[in-house]
Image (cartoon, rainbow, N blue to C red; front, side, top):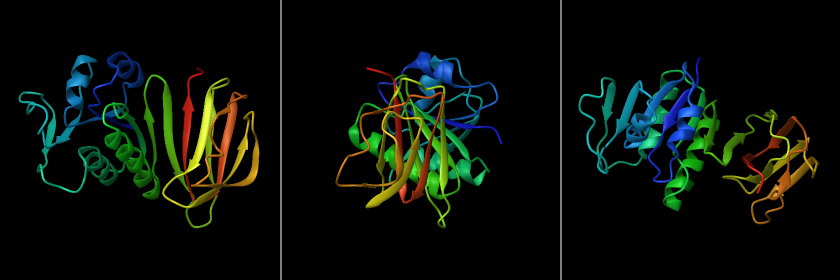
Length: 214
């Protein structure tokens, strides 16, 4: 299937970046006030999901709207993810999800783990970085390619678990079946030195960050 792109409403959302990141064949979903940024970027979503407690209800938007109750366990972004997983999407890109409130940003990292544990792959992207969570399931290695990022910064940490085991190829600091522990941030401050680097996850879950050179 095509990618599912979910646009959030972080106050630090870069409209120009969203415009460049969205492809013509993406299925675009806006989480609550994310539709404001989509509208500014000239992007017409296929679906809006939210409780609209912090933004105006989008009358006359011309697309499907799923109205959520204000009091609920899921964030609006999580509701979008659940809906799109149910529709068969497995490749997710999340935009407008970083900056602003720290708890919201961390909640979106957790949502990436939910995607990974339900058979998908999700990436949060902004103009400076891309962040993914990968999960090793049933003892089977999980492979993540990092293409055309030579010179970019890189970091990998356990996420939602005490430790993870990784092999890193195409990085300044390589690793071979190396155990990373949640209480020791050894996976920070690395650099991509190849146009075709890769992360192999042998156990646990890992959050993978690629960011523009400083």
